Amino acid sequence: MTNYVSSASLVVTNALVLLSFFSTSLLLCNAAAYPPHHRHPSFASHNYRDALSKSILFFEGQRSGNLPPNQRITWRKDSGLSDGSAMHVDLVGGYYDAGDNVKFGLPMAFTTTMLSWSVIEFGGLMKGELQNAKEAIRWATDYLLKATARPDTIYVQVGDANRDHACWERPEDMDTPRSVFKVDKNTPGTEVAAETAAALAAASLVFRRSDPTYSKTLVKRAISVFAFADKYRGSYSNGLRPFVCPFYCSFSGYQDELLWGSAWLHKATKNPTYLHYIQVNGQTLGADEADNTFGWDNKHVGARILLSKAFLVQKIQPLHDYKGHADNYICSLIPGTPFSQTQYTPGGLLFKMSDSNMQYVTSTSFLLLAYAKYLTQAQAAVNCAGTIVTPRRLRTIAKKQVDYLLGDNPLKISYMVGYGPRYPTRIHHRGSSLPCLAAHPAKIQCSSGFNFMNSQSPNPNILVGAIVGGPDQHDRFPDQRSDYEQSEPATYINAPLVGALAYLAHSFPQQL
Image 1 (tube, helix red, strand yellow):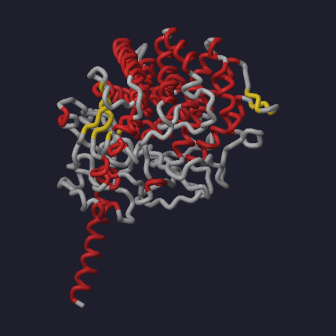
Image 2 (cartoon, rainbow, N blue to C red):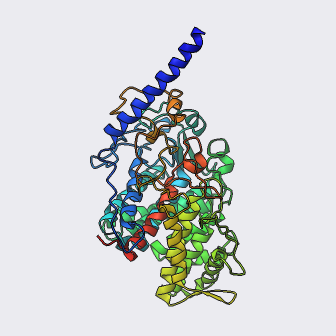
């Protein structure tokens, strides 16, 4: 009986200690990072400008390395300062992909490409947030330049994912192995190399006017990295399978990344070599395949939309077919057309995957708005077997998806942390869920962190702007830290939404 009482007392004591940590952390860690949300009568149902600011701020919470003096998410501190030392290379910096402490090259590069595309298409509408968006891109490209500094070699991962996932630690405390993994001539990784080339090429366009020297460095590296990707073909999921799978296995193969990478190099360099490459290899690389999911793994749809711009806006006739390929994708999304393949939840959310469906929502919304822009510039529309789909219709669909994400849904919850009166409070994110260094200076060991992970208390540190995986196909969302499929944020969920929010903030302003 005594043992039972002491065990119960211990449980109560631990719960009180945890509650104390959570409440203390909220006070100590979030003052600067969590700007208040003001609600105003408005022209728009949402304050898209506020959401845009927060969607970019999120990236500061994912930073690895030496944090700058102007770091705004102040509960995060320096981490991963010896990254790369295992291979005698400097790999300090970059982003943690999601709620763990590993740096995965494939999703980081895709995040960079999409942040860059967001700025290229909608940066002129970002106003005061443009500089923050550029800094988010540069944090990634500085790292990607380090990862590609050695010829025919790309460092594609820092951290042993299996060991990392067995711990629940703050990035500032992590003591799991910071193993380094690379692709090279002997262990090729075409998809991660070609995506890295796409990221560097896209970012070079972002900095072309504001920092031409940096822009030239980026595009020069993109050219050499793409040449390596194309020459030494093979999937990194084969050579590095024990380390990158099941986390970021490439299921779509590497053909999509070769098409996507060459499309970005064509856009960045205007070199006819890349146009010729696309003309010769486009079909082989899957230009007209009916795979309609755009994300960190499959880039076919993004390449079709991007290349259709070259035809529609720049009038590059050899890319005529990509307007048709892009239209086929659009027709697959439109309810009621003969080609519609799209599923929606009862509440109206696009639904494609049970794990992190919101990445599909944000990437699709961005493509709809980008394509609507190109169609408008060309005074064109989409013909879905006799049903004419206008740019306005595409914008309406995209806006409805973003509005659902921001709170217009059956649960009346915003899936962006820190936006609106109600949002997820128990996200699957180590740094957010553990007390910050100011509240708990002592190291939190690998296994003891799970006390916090398994707690029902709200996360003590608010990861402002983080977009979680989202609801299930029935619009349900449990807000449980253990449910990583629905409650984990990721950089590649946020990146496409940055561009979409910039467009909406401009087109649907709030009346202040």
